[in-house]
Image (cartoon, rainbow, N blue to C red; front, top):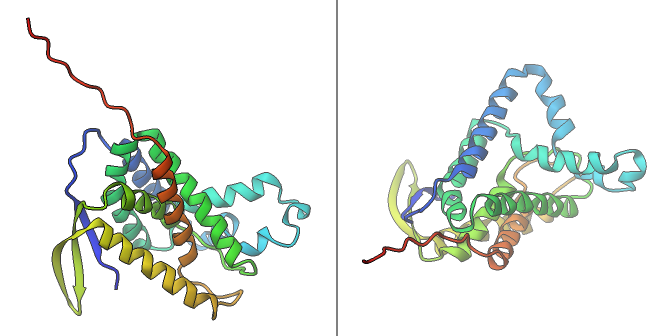
Length: 235
């Protein structure tokens, strides 16, 4: 069972507008999904990532650049249920705000979408024959987690630890919480490589791994946002 983060204890100096925008957009699109009824499956197969579409001379079959990029980015805004949406948005809320505060609104979006792109490519590369559509913002959010892992390793995260039917509320260092989260993705993803078939669904573990690692890289090379310094004049 993965621990449930509730909030961090970092004092932020700017409002998390981009994080809020991503949460609102994802929620609105999910509500739109609910309105589609029987047409939802068609939308998921149209805009979800289906790895088999990207192999065997995909471009020669008329996919083109639009057919390549649109599902990769559109799939980041689709979710398979309330639990899927709420879990992703909770992680984005807890960790996205401080990353946005550190790097600024625009660089935060660069981390978010670049991580989502790399996550999708990683999933495609390791599931080349799969015909199962993959959707969700978790690859992009994994990049935010990776950026947080190296930016605020000692931050304390208030977390719920499931213990059978009870929950234990504790403060956990970010480096331990996110390191444990990454280990689960890596180990489970490695195990699934041995048993996965072209028609098997489930969690895109390697998308999370790819997103997390590129988030670490981007956090290392992007400069934190410049801060305005207030100077008091003494007469």
